[in-house]
Length: 286
Image 1 (tube, rainbow, N blue to C red):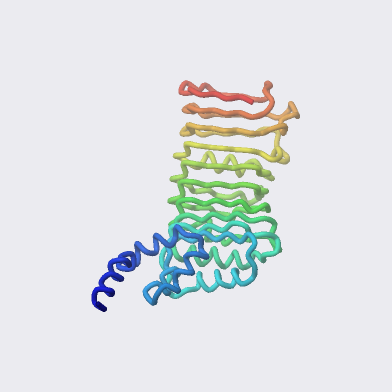
Image 2 (cartoon, rainbow, N blue to C red):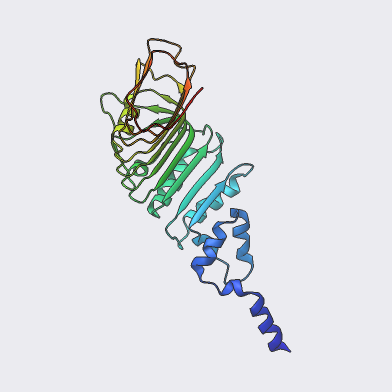
């Protein structure tokens, strides 16, 4: 009878016989709290959660204990390479030095995707320079409600998607950033303030395979009367400058000869200048 009971138990617990890699993939699909609770199932499950390839951390309504738990989790000796590291819900109560350490940690684990969504932090969210020179990154998304100062050199050889939102993108005229984004195909820049329009020019002109650009300005770039987009590989462009173009001395120049889809939000006047677009099939103007 005991043997039958044991055999039945083993049959019901087939999931525990799966390889660690598959179990960790399954755990990474769960909320972090539920994933950690599986450690109580048995010794087989005790430390599996520490080897999850994806970490999605939501700090809404969570206190200091959860922050300390994340510290321990990211410093676990059972470290594996990360497919995705996602942080949401950080607020001004949280010190950015902790976020800095977390990003450094996941960069050392060859993260492929990093997504940071946070409100105004206690101190400005200084980001590690290595974040902008990481070979493993494929997707980078920053939504931090603060200034973003690019380092002197930005080289992300495998990055295909870059999303920037709720940022004041600062540039240094005397020491402009050198961008190297050879595989960037999708660039989304929403609700941003450009202190220096040259940052946008460099981003688009030095991305040789860029196909999609979504640009939404919170304010017109300072000290600039012209906004230019020059990209021969661009296929889809969404440009939202809202009411920022009420000064009719300001000019928007779009030179994208292979554009297929174009959406424009803003005033229509002689300030909008388009090159010949023989491939254009879909146009939306609001």
